[in-house]
Image 1 (cartoon, helix red, strand yellow):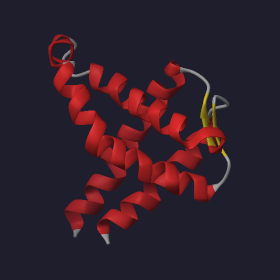
Image 2 (cartoon, rainbow, N blue to C red):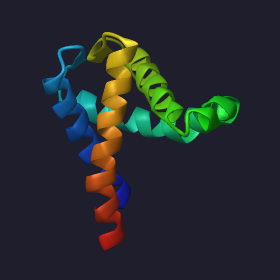
Image 3 (spheres, rainbow, N blue to C red):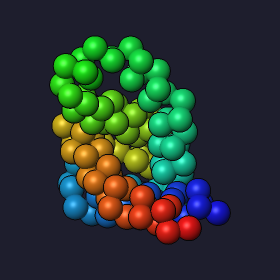
Image 4 (tube, rainbow, N blue to C red):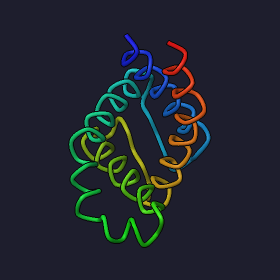
Length: 115
């Protein structure tokens, strides 16, 4: 149940980001839910592999390179979704990843601790 609530909150965050930035387009809330599902799958499967291979640069940048990895997973998700989820550039993807991380830190983490 927690996972489903997190999925819906992430979909709402993606919709909010698509309204804030002109470089991100979502075709609707259904596409946001699918994108959120794909993004969680990417974060489960692809992200650990990318973190492993980029560990030296992640250590050198004191962990800031993890935002670049999150941007990459967001771009992969947009690529898989096709026309339903469009991100114009890599910088926009990294900025969206930073905003998603901040919102997850301040919204999802307290929800998980409360239960």
